[in-house]
Length: 398
Image (tube, rainbow, N blue to C red; front, side, top):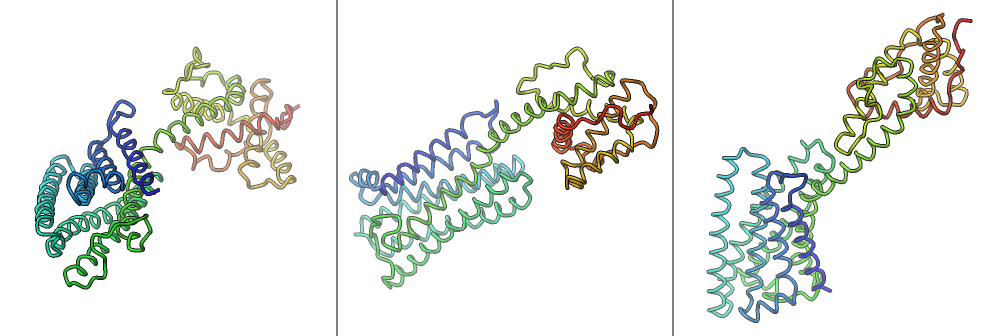
């Protein structure tokens, strides 16, 4: 089971790394290579945790799996900061900070290697092992703390929901990394003082057995998974959100067509491109065509303003109130549909209109310039227009 867990996780992380490396939409976003290094390092660290891999490498060099997994973990931590530096700093500052971190990583790995070799040559000397752990945990703890503070602060400033939740998930993963660092520090104190509170070099039979493996194995594993998911979530959700948006744009464009035909038949001069009213809307032009359709409908409504009859509005509002839909978006859309229908009929017939001019629909000003909000409103009006057309002679002079 533990082999499947760690090997499967490593494969998933490598797939994530491949996803980041390949270009998306013809370009690679900032921090692509740092993210790929992060995911690949985590994948190698997880692979080194698998008992089968551990036995294979330790058949060549005893106990080297620990050095490999710790090295990959520190490399991943450095890649995390490199990714953040490229996002938050200008190019020159980011490169300078990344160089300093890479130098610190090289020094830390070199120091760990020296103490590891010395430990093996001296029969697993506890003092040498403590020095090894001190280097590892110092670098990891500092990096995790720095990363936690930066991601949490960035999540408060982010405007995209997927990015905000991704950063918060990453922050929680950093919290688990700090739990792991605290455990290793506790083990270091135990070893240094000879307290024997943590069994030295004992193996874990599962991620939770014995209990200390919850901190030594499960905590870093959860940290890696949460950090990976948190940093990758926005990149994964972006194409899905774009696909969903294109589907919504196409469906909205089609649903608005009956209302658009009605109002533009009364005011044809507002159509921006009369020779291409049935535009072949490919996936890249959906936003443009939908935006144009919404503008044209609104321009028609504005051009029909002097035909908007208060008597029609009052009659429709009374009917809506009778059905208990007053002050609801659907009810207001039904009233607006009735007013537009009567205005279109009056414009077509050329009959004079008596009475006061009906005011614009509620929320007209607040929706101005907001395409999603304006589209959602017109979809309600279009639906009501098709289901409840107003009487053709309502409010018109006889």
